[in-house]
Amino acid sequence: MANIVLGVTGSIAAYKACELTRLFVQADHQVHVAMTAAAARFVAPLTFRTLSQNPAYVDMFDEPAEWMPEHISLAAKADLMVIAPCTANVIAKIAHGLADDLLTATALACKAPLLVVPAMNTAMWENPATRANVATLESRQIKFVDAGTGDLACGTSGKGRMAEPGVIFKAALSLLSS
Ligand SMILES: Cc1cc2nc3c(=O)[nH]c(=O)nc-3n(C[C@H](O)[C@H](O)[C@H](O)COP(=O)(O)O)c2cc1C
Image 1 (cartoon, helix red, strand yellow):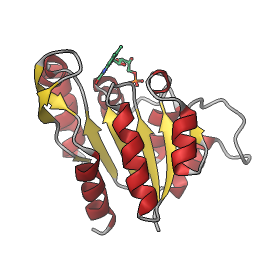
Image 2 (cartoon, rainbow, N blue to C red):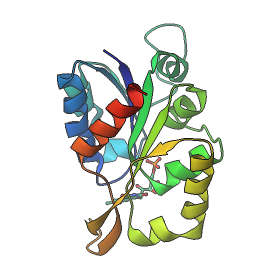
Image 3 (cartoon, rainbow, N blue to C red):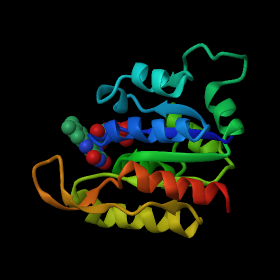
Image 4 (cartoon, rainbow, N blue to C red):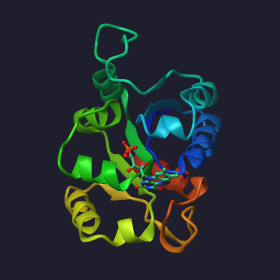
């Protein structure tokens, strides 16, 4: 049993993180979901709370369960942190060490391996800013599950589609056992 902190950000692909949560839970892992405020506009924290059977966290300033701030206790208990889907915005923030919400503060405080699963429109993915941010993270040995190519929610087709939950699940298990 591992403690997996699952970061969910504001992408239409957030619904796929529900299935990913189920896969981890079925494999007897503890899933602790940290969402951005934007993610909570796509999928309710209640869904993740129910699927994970653990609280789902959004607001860094909510009363923590214990005295320790939630982003610190989440980071400390993580055997692995997975951010799926990961927006261009959160890739940029973690590349630059920003920590202005619960998810990014947890990522900055977390010493466990981090698996980033991007999801975005092709132009955002190909933007030199995103390319540079991904390269920065890869240079720090942060692992990625590469974005796929196909139909995108914005009505176009190209690279930027989030990997399927089963693929992310396997990549996470392989990082946990490495
Ligand atoms: C319908 C919709 C879908 C979106 N999908 C994505 C996406 O897949 N990837 C992305 O980087 N941004 C996407 N965005 C934009 C983000 O939600 C926006 O940049 C937001 O500020 C991200 O916040 P977060 O990174 O804190 O979650 C989408 C916005 C909307 C309205």
